[in-house]
Each structure stands twice: as C-alpha cells, then as structure tokens.
Amino acid sequence: MRLSRYFLPVLKETPSEAQIVSHRYMLRAGMIKQQAAGIYSWLPLGFRVLARIEEIVHQEQVRAGHIPMLMPTIQPADLWQESGRYDAYGPEMLRIRDRHDRDMLYGPTNEEMITDIFRAHVESYKQLPMTLYHIQWKFRDEVRPRFGVMRGREFLMKDGYNFDVDKDAALHAYNRHMVSYLRTYERMGLKAIPMRADSGPIGGDDTHEFLVLASTGESEVFYDSAVTDLTLGNRAVDYADRAAVKAVCDEFTAPYARTDETHDEALFNALPEARRKVGRGIEVGQIFYFGTKYSEPMGAVVVNDQGQRVPVHMGSHGIGVSRLLGAIIEASHDDKGIIWPEGVTPFHCGIVNLKQGDGAADAACEGLYQALTAKGLAPLYDDRDERAGAKFATMDLIGLPWRITVGPRGLKNGVVELTSRRTGESEEMSPEAAVAKVAEIYTPHMAAN
Ligand code: 5CA
Image (cartoon, rainbow, N blue to C red; front, side, top):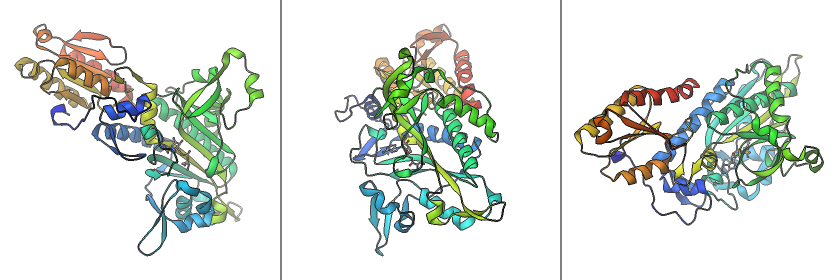
C-alpha cells in the first residue's frame, strides 16, 4: 500500500474523550471512528488488524477440529422464550419489533440459535463430537460502554458451541478450547492467563476467563506469579488425545489464578508471600461447560449407543475479537504510539522515503516495495511529500514493527536503514539484505498458518 493513496486519517490532537492509551491510539492512528456510544466504524487500518486477528482465531479453531459457519445478527425472540432467557437477559438485550409485529432481538450471544440448528439436523451420537463456531457481531446494551472497543455495545466475538454425548466428552471439548485459546493469544503476542471465574447469564459451574494483565483492565485478579512463566510455545498438541490436552490444561490451571468473583483468600494466603500478586486484567475470552441447560428445555437430544434418547452436553466458548485490539495495544505501546506484535501487525514493514522526488531514493523504495510484496509481505510505503520527522511520527504512531528508511545519502554507499519499532535499534545494510531480514523475521508467523 502506498500511503499517498491510502485512507489513514491520523489525528494530531489527543481526543479528550479517550481515557486509556489503547482508545487514544486507536483514534489517533485513524483505526476507528465512533458513530454512537459504544458503536464504531472500522477505518482501513483498524479493519486490517481486525482481519488479522480473525484469521488467527479461525486457524486455531480449525486446527482444534472446530467447524466455521455464520449465524445472523438478528434473532427471533421465540427461541429465547423457549430457553427461558428472554426475560432473564434484561435491559442489555436490544429488542426490536418488525413490521409484522414479531419480536426480534440483536443477538448478544447464540446458545439458543445454535441449539435450534443442532436439534433440526442431528439425531445420533455417531455425528458427535461436534463443535460449531462463528465470528459475528454482537450487541449488548451495556450501561457504561467505555474505553473504545474494549467495552463496546456492538462488538465482534468468536463464539463456539460444542455438542457431546456425555459430560466427559464435553469436558474434553472444554479443554480443547482452553488449549486452542492459549495458542491463539500467544500468536497475537499476548500472555492471557486462564482464571477460574463466574458464569453469569450464560450458566454452568465450569468456566474460565482468559485475562491479559494490564493496569487499565476492568477485572481485579489474584494470581500466583508462577503462572506468568508458563508458555505453550511450539509444542505439538494432539487435539484428539484427551489425556494430552488435559495435561496442558492442568499445567496452566495448577497455579492459583482467579478473578475477584471467585477469589478465595485462604487459598491465596497459603502461597509464599513473594508469589502472591494482585492486579488488574482485561478479559479477552471465556469458556463454559453448562451441560444440558439449553439442550433439555429446547429438546436437543441424540440417540446414544444404548439406544436411549439423551439431551446433549454443551458448552460455549467466546473470544472478544474486537476487544483484542485494545488489549494488544494496552500490552504493547510506548509514548510514541502502538507497537504491533508481528503476528497481528496491519502491515509487515514500513518504507520511509526521506527525499520524495529524488530519482535514486524513489527507485530504491519502489524496488523494496516490489521485493517485499514478492515475498508475500504487505509493506506500507510512505511516498508522501512530507518532512522526514512527520513520516517517522506517523510510522511510530501506527506501530509497524519494522521500518526501512531510504535516503539519498545512504544510497550513495549502497545502504538503507532497518529499524525495530520495539527497541528503536537501527542497522545499515543493502536493500536486498533488508528485504531478506524482514522476510526471515516473518517466516515463523507465515508458517504458523
Ligand atoms: N456465549 C458465551 C461464550 S461464546 C459468551 O457470550 N461469553 S462472554 O459473555 O464471556 O463473551 C465472550 C467474550 O466477548 C468476552 O470474554 C469478552 O472478551 C468479549 N466481550 C464481552 N462483552 C464485550 C463488550 N461489551 N465489548 C467488547 N467485548 C466484549
């Protein structure tokens, strides 16, 4: 992409309505525009990051054996009357009436609809296990939408639903989700800690939230510092192997880690004092096992291997896709702007031309642009007729992890400069070497697909 032809409406002023850094930077970097309280347009730069996050979520769900689909945003109220949640959900649900006076709603979640789909088409335990998921917009009429995409009213969620013949199989689905979520967040450069939580309106007793530690987080969290040392890394986990999947979950849930809803003072105080940590966290996902809460009232039954008709055991599993942008920025920024982790960056590399219109500089930038693109990378070339300082400030604000700076002076010696946004360190090298190095940096991220 050439910046002169892109739509990147960066703001010079810090918007006064934004209280936390991620919200400020998303507005300043021209990623989002508020259209109403808690409702945003995704401008091109924000949309690119959102798409990258969605892609990682899809890849890790499919890897775990889960099946993508798409349900509508608008749902009929009668499904919710069947489950008994239509009244229970309260004012957070946006209720709509159509021209035929039918009660509709903008879905805050999809347990009822997916159960309806399942009961219409699945009859035998032989079709199980089955996990269906989608990435779709949700609406929750939050009392206090705030912090930009962090607590929106309209927000993008990945929600998945498992259907299993018994509790053991459903708990395996729960564990599979936990492992797939750990992988998902790590690929986004995040450390998200599974914490025992409260199930709220979704229901059930088994539930974990995934929290990214951040001082601006909305949840108070209590944890053993040992949990922050755990990483999944590149280990291969066979999702069909119940014991192997459970072993990973046991490892990650062994250290004490709870939100204030389930915090247990006595257990916490039993930890050595130096390991007791109290902090704040951003909830980027939650998984639930709720057994037959929806399948029983809604008649989602299968015939089991004994020939008996039994309600299926279910769970639901959510990732806050749009909230993740805010969480990633909270976890990765400095006073100049965002620092995108390589896994989610909107463009892989910036190209800054220090002297637009200089024949040699223009040609070198074009060459870099073509070579990076040929490697499957997406460069953002700042080809505007602007001062160098302004170009650097824009690149720092939008947070591309790598920048190649090209100027007539360096080119006389055959070199350009490759700079890391994270460390600020620069290295001079030939344009070919810079392309090779950037391509090498992204190899593991491309291979993770
Ligand atoms: N049906 C279940 C699982 S699919 C469910 O709705 N779970 S949830 O309520 O925990 O939401 C899943 C994730 O969506 C949360 O962990 C959070 O990351 C995100 N989320 C929830 N509410 C909002 C909101 N108002 N704005 C942005 N993200 C949100």
